[in-house]
Length: 259
Image (tube, rainbow, N blue to C red; front, side, top):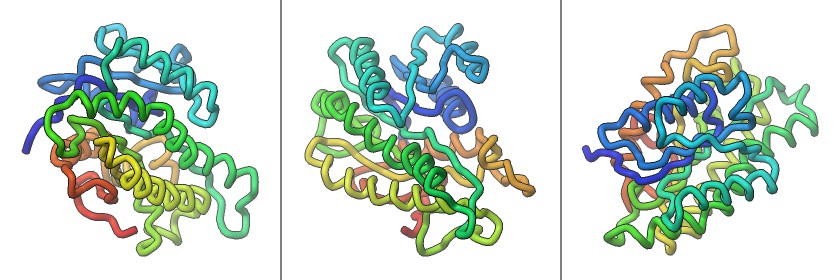
């Protein structure tokens, strides 16, 4: 299996959980990216302390203020990254930021559904639109015509909870808006794969597994996967992706997840 070799990567929701784990592992690669952009709502705040500690040790780590539901914030983040890259493109956009709210069919509300959908589905759409020029630039500057994450890719962090066929853990996880938002994110990924292929951009939806994070571990049962296990697996999967994988829905081990 090859090694992930990218010059630049941006991770949203990077101050904790899977996002922070991705940043840590990217910085620890044998050939780390020239630039790792770690985006979150308040990179100078108390909830981003670990990210700040990392940034003090790694000059190639740039923290970015980003609210994924705010178009002005998205535009400002893209301008900040473009300025830092100084004419180069962005190889990898990882849309990881997401939220979940515990609501069933009986208790779901307009406000909850709107908030979750805006963060989990519309946010990745806005980010992908804003960063497409930089992704296209990276693709144009990479040798060969084959799609890969080393060239240019959008990775949308999905969930098996959004699988319409499986409806994973339906009885134990009453997160209706989360499930709907991830099913919609999967369709967005498929559409992006068809629309962005001509620009040399690979698009994939990834299920990180049921992971021990603030969001994943909020119920009564302990999730089976650590952040390290999940992130290590996902980075291996990203290394192996090629033309045939664009528009697919895979888990952290590279297995196909049913739509």
